[in-house]
Image (cartoon, rainbow over all chains, first blue to last red):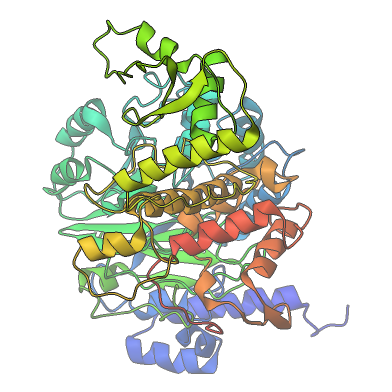
Amino acid sequence: MRKGVKSIETKHYEERDSFFDGLRRLDRRGFMRLAGLSAGIAAAKGLLAPQSFQLISVAEAATPGAKPKFSFAYISDSHLYKKELNDRFVRSLVRAVDDVNRLDPQPDFVLYGGDLAQLGQKEELALGKEILKGLKAPVKMMVGEHDWFLDMGDYWREQFGEPQYSFDHKGIHFVTLMSVNEKDFWTARNMTPMERMLTVAGLDNGVQSRFEVGAAGREWLKRDLAKVDKNTPLVVFSHSPLYKYYRPWNFWTDDADEVQALLRPFKNVTVIHGHTHQILSNQIGNIQFHGMLSTAWPWPYAPEGLPSLTVPMNRPDPFSNFDGCGDGRMEVLEGGLVDKLYSLWDRDPVTVKSSYLASGGRKDRPPTSRLPPY
Amino acid sequence: MHVRNKLGLAALGLGLGLGLSAWQTASADSSNPQHRVPRSSDGDVVIALCDGQTTLEVEGVKDPSSISREKAQAISDELMTAWRKKNPDARWDPPTRLVAQANPPRPPPASSAPVKAGGQTASSDPDEAARRAGANVQDGHTYGAFSARDEAIWKASAEQAVKEGHRVFHDAKTLGSTVAISCDMCHPDGSNTHPETYPKYQVQLGRVALLRDMINWCIENPVRGKPLAEDDPRMKAMEAYLYAQRKGVKLEYGKH
């Protein structure tokens, strides 16, 4: 190679290094100058690719506590069938794994948000486990109702351990809840395990009960939180939203109020949930809520109960296998709150910042959807 | 068989069975309502009408004997006249013809449907019923004369179609999916199907589409099945289900 001619990769890395060097010495004004000179123009329009230089987050660095501390990624709601039966959902999960593996820098860990399987069968869960092995970062598993109601979690626990656990990471206390327990509707109806599973798998199947953490789960949470300082930021993972959005579809946790009461004494609380397959944001008191995207299919917004802070995502295009689906990432800020990045496939990503929720929607509003839901 | 024959003769007036009076008086001891038929002093045949009240002594006809068809018709007419005098408002509408149904409603339609006390029934005289109700309505027209029970039956029939649509919509096998996908997986409660916006120009297809075109598009693509014929009962049922889900929503064809 001739001297002085640089490869594209070299140029990219040099540009990247000088970019981050520059940012280290940057005030807000300087940032705007730099942004104007570089890809920041795109960033300012919200066109930032998830794995590029994080201009938007850095732009807010002047706000105290809003500097990113570390990030973790998520993949959720893959609803795998056996791969001989349905390969599309398999390809979607593989795509999400590739997405997360391409993140640079790598996330500290990856949250799997539940509903790995469609009907809780061994082949489905084993296939999912196999695919998730491809992730470079460590995985934190959460259970969903589709994983659970065939054998009441026997196989899932065998593969992934207990569904409720907590851990501390870089000053944050993380809790994973099992929030998709249901009161027994099957014994009285003499259902087989598969009938029970199929009933729960139907989102609009009113025969099933409502999701709940349950008394035992809440007791566990109470004991777990007792040893945590109230100033320690909390991040809670639950499969169902830990509030009441739409009861008929179980976009709902029946004992959400009791669980929220346990979280209320803490200064900064963020709940990350799956199940709803859509961009979903909410704030109740001190608790911020973020939904996760599915890799399999998007759900429509429910006919009522949508939190007013949610800026709905553009109506998904049914003619695209992947539209409205995706994965994403959480930036944990110095202050302990979380900026939520929705990496929508084949679309521009959308960031919902903690400052947007904390300000009651006055600051940092995410882009409005062009095509509202019907 | 024997009993039914005799009742049939009396009601239709096609012939005369003799020895009726003897049978009618034979069992007079039970507590059920009895049609007590007087014996003829001359030993003539006495005929009891199936209304449980009317009797007719046929003069000059003894039991046993045979009579002509004309005589039998005359007896029958006389009985009918007597009955009409007692029931001047009665109408003899022919029974409605039974229409063959592909899916007979189940459970038995409207078996527990509310019937308005004192209201019209399927066999009542609509003009008379309207007069009784004191309503000043146009008379002499049977169309539109129906009861709450009729409406209940019709509603149950419509709901039956909707229910079948619900079943098809939620059943990957019935839809013919090769990948175990059913409609409800993306459209819980039929949401986001917006049937009220069709027909419209479907941009992705490059032509005007009806709801059924989109149903078939979904069956062919995400569901990966074979498209249904437009008059396939499953297609009709699903259309019924989807429209039922949007009751009260403004019809807005062409909306995007």
